[in-house]
Amino acid sequence: MALRLYNTLTQQVEPLQPLEDERVRMYTCGPTVYHYVHIGNFRTFTFQDLLRRYILYKGYKLTHVMNITDVEDKIIANSKAEGVPINQYTARYTQAFLDDMEALRIQKPEKMPRATEHIDEMVELVQKLQKNGLTYESDGSIYYRIRGFQGYGKLSRVELEDAKAQARVDSDEYTKENPRDFVLWKGRRQGEEAYWDTPLGQGRPGWHLECSAMSMSYLGESFDIHCGGIDLVFPHHENEIAQSEGATGKPFVKHWVHGAHLIVEGEKMSKSAGNFYTLREILDKGYSPRAVRYLLSSVHYRKQLNFTFEGIEQASAAIQRVDDVLRKVRQLSPAGQDDHDLSQAVTKARTDFEEALDDDLNVSEALAALFELVRQANLAVDAGKVGEGNRRAILKLFQGANSIFDVFQLEEEELQDQEVAGLIEERVQARRNRDF
Image 1 (tube, rainbow, N blue to C red):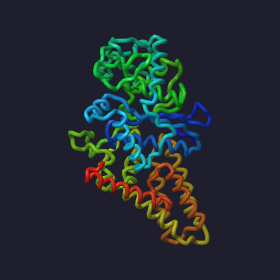
Image 2: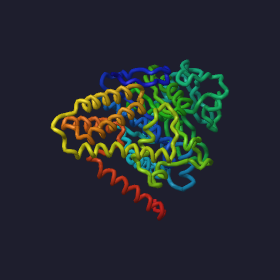
Image 3: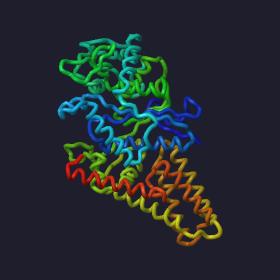
Image 4: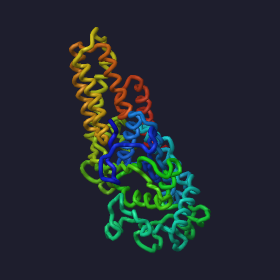
């Protein structure tokens, strides 16, 4: 059965049908590296990782690109406040993000381009838009004239006259012809140190421009999947479509997939509410990366997740249930003959698991199928009814499931988890000693 995903563009659940027969080309919005990444972002990155892994599980080849935004207003302000060059400032938080990805077992995409390494491609994209009559200049900056693009609003369903929509468009402190237009190239202002000398003049790219240029550089002018958080639908992804299709005249992305936000202890996450957490702060409290990953993965990506510390503990207990039965199955001395009922239970669990994930990544139903098998396997082990074929089938099923969820303790992973725990302890000590 084909994987079916909700497409924000069409507002329907549709089968994944790659533009190339066997290869899926996917772009996922990565972090802006001005600080440590918070758990709300990692909810998005975790769902994107599940999608990546299930695409591979289905047998497709995959080219996955995730950008690193390493030039942006907050980065410029923070690096200036610390008195360090931008590249030095962003290198620190880029590496921190990669370390956090590893702790959460998020697979690295095939490509992780940095915005500052693709200025030439961004300039070329702006030049194409200029040629197509979709830009204008004001005070040294270059803007996209959205009135010139007839398809604007098709992703977000936003009306150009919507006052609320206007308020959410870029609030750049640059002079615009129309408040709904957005900046492509920010002209250098007096005293600004973050700029590039280009045919467009001295300046730096706008945020929306970066993703269009980098995605098309690696995936082509049209590709299969673009992912991100629901907050990026408008204006970021809407502007990406306008830029990309305005330059090429071709459909930009076939399938747009967006994940819902998380809340913390029932409230919106914010520093003022005291419930704003980076992943590192959660792990420094002693919680397992596997339990955090499980919690982030356990709710359908289009449903809001309530992140609680009780939830992490429940996730840890759920993982332990699976770990315990897998250890029993590995260590038992199999009965001479396979148990027919258990064989059927394994087959049903595999079918239910895959059908659930095929249905728009329905993780709750997929996990329910696994835990029903855990229950039946426990009963069979206690009754001495597990044959060698049963044992191999159970372990094979969980190996496949773990290639997607990557939270269960398979025998060969025990050392890896100990190493992760050791690294967390080292980081805790470093924080105590203020040795970052």
